[in-house]
Length: 313
Image (tube, rainbow, N blue to C red):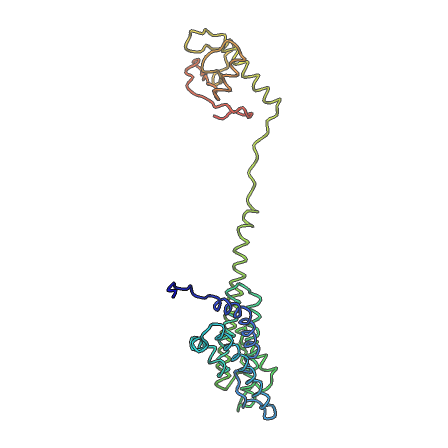
């Protein structure tokens, strides 16, 4: 006798999930399209078509009953499944409960972000409401909605929150239906407004990036300009190299610039201009000798040298 615990069989659950994925949307759509047919009782129809209405209602209930039975068999516990899904069970015997299935379809379209499908489901709900109001109101005393065209016009005016008041329901079922149509219109307008606002918000960053001025590119330095500057540095190094090697301070060149001028030198005198060029390239800077009205005063400032073609101080 084997006492090893067997793992739970998940094949039934997978088959049930696959069946629900194939049939739930179709059944919810069927409930949405035939909502007016399920909500209005057969005695509100004309006497000559009342038997046909009863037959169609029974056929629709049979469709949902068979669906519930198949789900119960696939779940492995038919009675338990039916009791744990009261909406599906009650909708078989009480057709108006299928309103919940229609609302579930609209909710699923909204959650999935299918704006067009959500608006289509909302439009079908409003159309159902117009037919329901017409069937309830057409024979009511003092009713203003007598034809299907008047009911459709009233539904359009109501769902857009205009409310001219030329047609109004007078029966209790008609007014309850009107309340659902008003809620559907407000929800649809809110969804459309939110979608439009979201689109504008998403477009704002791209427009702002398009309006930002592009940064000015640094001026290009030609090879001739770079050679001219390097030649100037060699000339200054040659002047500085005429000073004594033992003198810690640099001597001024023969031609001193006027007061307020600048003389660029290296940190130490060199014997050859070429070596001075290499030292500047290695050091990355040149010293500055400040010449004032009373002669040279100090050389404690340094300018970093960028061999890219310009000096920064």
